[in-house]
Length: 143
Image (cartoon, rainbow, N blue to C red; front, side):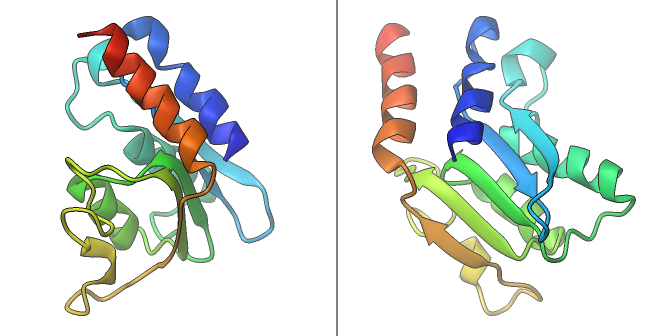
């Protein structure tokens, strides 16, 4: 999670919400990294998780990321939760909850929906205070 926090800080110069993510293989190798780039790229899909998943799939040589763990500083939104389910990520580890857009238990619980063909293990609250503070401080400075 510390590496994801470092990645999150890279979003700040472009004015993006500081969220960072990485995909780690079952062997512990970092397959992909990402931080929010919506503002930098003028792309509504440029969320940290999606970018990390894309990089990991490119490095792995395929879209199935079985055995991988997605580590992200904030609870994923519906788009990102759907992407990690479709990528067959084995485990999701996240920091702070997102009461406004979270899709891993806050507003929705997409990743545990039994109607879907894949349900990753979820570990929540890792360094939650640090992850939450980074985002709260960002929004406090922009209001």
